[in-house]
Length: 213
Ligand SMILES: Nc1ncnc2c1ncn2[C@@H]1O[C@H](COP(=O)(O)OP(=O)(O)OP(=O)(O)O)[C@@H](O)[C@H]1O
Ligand SMILES: Cc1cn([C@H]2C[C@H](O)[C@@H](COP(=O)(O)O)O2)c(=O)[nH]c1=O
Image 1: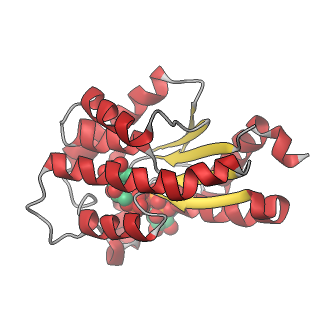
Image 2: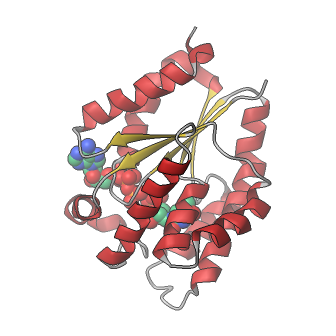
């Protein structure tokens, strides 16, 4: 048996990281070293270095396909160093963003094409998809408002894209969720922080009974 791979997805400011922090605090006492928490782009030295390049607001000259390739390169290293070893040890991996982010942001947001970006990522992932994806759905205006109001110190190169970019990202996520209802579970991320955590934990526990015996 392999472990469980769970990704958290959503537009900027949807509240994934906030919810994930509480969920980890809740699950850690139960799962202990069976729980692995990580993020994309990042999760290891090489991928974090790529993250710094991609998200640096000074890198305004970066080509859209270069950006897509860098995300995929960071992903490959993350899979090899973190995700695959954890799954082989039958752990539960909670990952803040994965390949759906590339399809939504580079495929739809940058208009490279969702199929092209997905196909390009097949090389990076060798077909590894999450067992479960929690999609945090939120209107783009609300997500961006949250970021601008609370997180001015961490605003990155993608956060500052136009509203139309973020709307394409959200539409693409909704399309992904519509096409893969078995894998992708949508939660209403406009609810309170406590309710969002409750909704996400209910899905994780319902689908992973073997971890909570
Ligand atoms: N349910 C919520 N209601 C209101 N504000 C929230 C909620 N969840 C998170 N926030 C606030 O919104 C901001 C963005 O949250 P967070 O960083 O968790 O989003 P995110 O989905 O991880 O965004 P990004 O992908 O851009 O990093 C934070 O300031 C956070 O405190
Ligand atoms: C994995 C991945 C991410 N992005 C974007 C989405 C966000 O704007 C940033 C990451 O920042 P976060 O605070 O960690 O959410 O990168 C992307 O465009 N494509 C991807 O594949």
